[in-house]
Length: 432
Image (tube, rainbow, N blue to C red; front, side, top):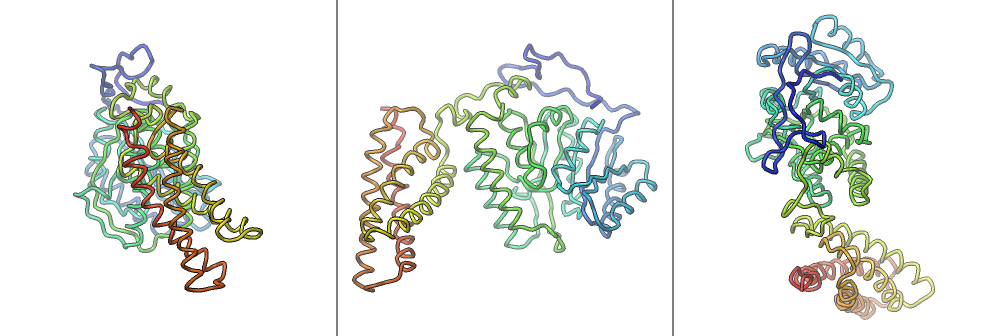
């Protein structure tokens, strides 16, 4: 990959130079007459109707508003209609349009393919429906050209953004970003907006480590960049939802959650070489309030709630499965006791490490004892609910028992979080 980038003197680690403990800005890109400064990728699948108007509008905007040479690359993701023919016609019509055909679907795969082969120093992409106002394109890429930032994203969740979309997508988008903040400690505001850019020299380092080839590609790239100490610039955008969007929201959400779990595991086990990347890129080590969780810094309140909720859901499912298993051979109260003891021990250990960021064996035994005390409260609530059910509805079905236990567990879970945060895992007690 070639890029017209002004030279600079690297630090001994091979990355960007450091200034006063902070990473110095990257060198500004110097345009030349032979290489496009910007390569905008438009991934498409069966978009024969929208592709022509999209490229024509984008080409006109870049011609009028972008001061440097540019390229528009149509990445055809194995379309089965006339999309490829339309793309070829556009390539013949405009000198600045190129076409890349892939035999497999996947937005992430298309971006990786085009970005890896591109000779432009700044790489971007946008959705074919042009839901994002193109006036945000120059503010998006300008910090990358100047060297101020390494990546840039359009954000629909900024206070100054103007967004028109349905309540379903709005709720899903905001919940997804809360999950990212809680599980992966992401600080960027909008992972899924189809309007992003990256410097080619940064992409060259990060792309080989990004595994996803579909919709989670963006999130994985951003998390990796953020953990590597790179600058992510956010641009408020005006965005209008495409009512004809064919994205399967449920399937995409499930795939994204699987991706979050995979990346979280890779970060926790060290499978992603974040420390090595930081050294290679010349980013300073994380210290103080910005330290990685592996250093033992407790996550914030939002992260604690999200993680506690996820662990709680898993614990509840495990409890119900164990209860159902024991219930085949034991009375209800005995089954409830055994299932609660097993899940309580696992729940306390998981929350100690993941929710409250406590590492090592110090106070681990005490935490388990205190966790069992908190568990006793849950036992009283759940056992009491079963006893009350037996009084109010003798001979109630197994399904009714499970429903009552779910409600009782929800109340017990809320009380357990309060007890964990204010007593068992309180920072002053852990540091005493």
